Image (cartoon, rainbow, N blue to C red; front, side, top):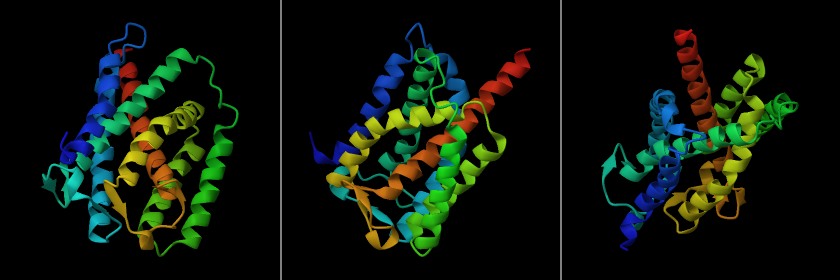
Length: 229
């Protein structure tokens, strides 16, 4: 296979199994797609804006060897697809865990995790306020986790549990993207800390993106339930 299809293939494989398994008779994830896409669009637009700004501030660049060469606003097509395929796959993980793991394992410590995330965000913002990627990542995290802390939605523990499980595919996908590398980071605009080849910030940029999507997913699902009553 030509190297230029690498990022596209990563997107395809990220989406393939959640779509195929959506028709499982037990979870029936396909019936919930309509609650996913509004949030995907809203969140995708927000994060693509940051992504575009990151290219302007030289936070990261894309290796032309691994993309097909179609760009929109400095972003390769594959990067735009990434903000659809990854959240979709993670919401699939979230819903499967909700079905197969009946007990809300982290229910009792969801708000403690919120406090830890808020504290981490404040520390990172103080230490690295002059690094664009760190500033945006932990600014977004602080904003969205404050929402959880104040509103205390019933799915907080379930979200964090799903996020922990989603770290397995996260390390596979982001490991490939950063080790080949498909995405090349400028360490002058991040904290310089890495887990393997993955920047420390990536973990929390992903967390914020997924949390935004879950908030919208649960909102549109709840609103639909209220309209039916």
